[in-house]
Image (tube, rainbow, N blue to C red; front, side, top):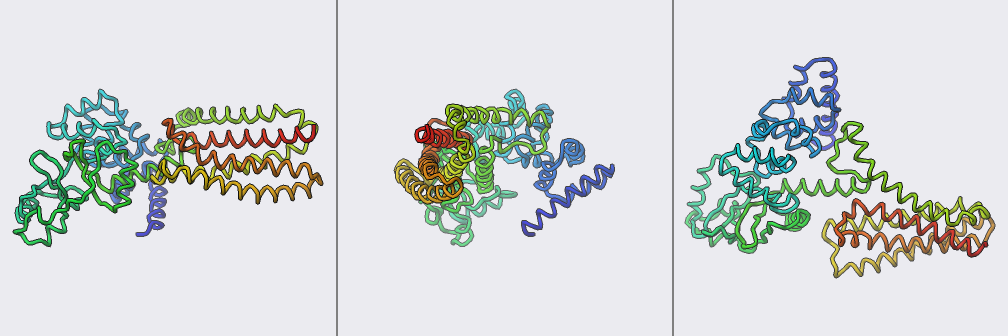
Length: 452
């Protein structure tokens, strides 16, 4: 089924389901849910208003609740889990993969998490605690401890017999991990090699030693870059002593890539990528209030700049008509550069060695665009107001603001990251403040010099 067909099917399911619930046909709604995969049920849940969600949760098969919660965004997970006690959380999450369970427990209060851990058997508890000990934005927090290891002095035949003893293999198993008695990672044994090699061959002869294991403290964004660069399906994770502690699979990395993209998009509007589309009014208003306050302060700052030149505007009224052009052009130019740099930073393309070249490149682009558009606007303003002096003022102001915007858009994300502030979150507001304030100040300041 194509993406378009899936999208259409989801919309039809939401429509039919809502109609069934509104009509009180709960049996029909339950049948619809039974025909859908857990990811499909989670999609319906996220796409429904609160009243419908309450009914849906009552209709969901109890055995599927854990898998569905796992597929929901963090905001919805918190809403559901906050209503459960430790025993209920343990029952719901039974059977989930260790890394998925860790993601859920990280959203719970410490007291509930401790009670859930105490209710588990020792082996599962140790696995889970090893993941919870790492930050969720590191390889350790992303990894799964469910691995299959072999020794290099084993034969392929012995490895095959060992694999057949398992009822199933961990998901996304494309390699077996070769370790020594101290669990130090020595290499990987591709399953393809196991299947095509002579049974009497030793693992040492067919294993791959040229592997790049992932350090347990590596940031998830860097992990995603490695998976993209090397087309991995899975990769081993090691600690500082090169001891195997787990592995990361492509399905988890896809989630990281998706979350990173959503974060970059939503943060520019001051929103969280995990915000619930159908969250209650007061909750949504509270979350947006802070960002609106920040934007208000930046708008006030720009207004103060205009206030400084109030007398100039009173004498040359048409300055008020033209000054938004200067600020707006600077804002657009700066946003283009800002977006490009933030994307490049997320992909790991920018480093101290090439940042200087990037700044010089953006300076050159800003100068070229500044000259072209300044000349065009100057001609338009001259034919509009028949004022050569005004044409020169707006052209010079636009040149200065476009160059300022380009340099700010290129340098600002690097500066914010250096002081540990998310560029995607703060970059757009800071850039708007700079381009508006500089644009108004330069344009009105030049007008005051020439006209007063």
